[in-house]
Length: 308
Image 1 (tube, one colour):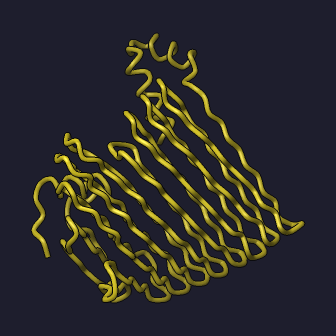
Image 2: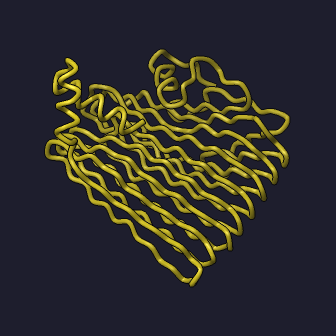
């Protein structure tokens, strides 16, 4: 295990709100190595032997417990790919907090690619929080390319909070999900890019069981010359309900491409998509500026409220 320095501790606070070691199970990773681990009677963590990553097994009936698995990089030039598999038993109700923070003050790029696969048992509920954060004044880039695969058994629920607000130069986030009967997926993405950053969000959700549902909503802000692409596809293969929505604010010379798509393969599939891209309304700015805020302060207030 590694001893954490102050930069690493700050990154853990940013991506996982960890001011001290968390209660419950955890696996902390820093600069490619293990920085801390705890298992519990109901949540087991094992290191993979064939490749980098861990296997997490959550016993059936586990309720009210949490698992923290954040990753931080504080050295320039590190590139890693980690494979984490989650096996959640039947009738569970758990919180899983992931995320990655990169502080790059050097000239080489730093990159973390996390491949997460969730196997969620019958009637289980998982709340998953994944935050990305970048900092550092070096010329090296901060790159994150996460892949999340979700396989949901009957009656299960997955709530995903995906957040990237600051400092990541390039990211390609891919989320794939397959839902069985009466299962439910809810995704809330919040994203802000600035400078010449780029962010690609890809969602492909297959509703395979009767009564399954998905609600995928993204809110984003593109500033300066940054670029974003939101590509979300919901496929209805049963009597199901699906909704995808992209709501974006564009500023300066930013660019945003929204590509929502639906595929219905069953007459009982009810699928809806929405997309809206626009600038901050002038009357909103005027109202806040009349209360004594500068134009820049008013913009920040509006953006903060929008991304809440």
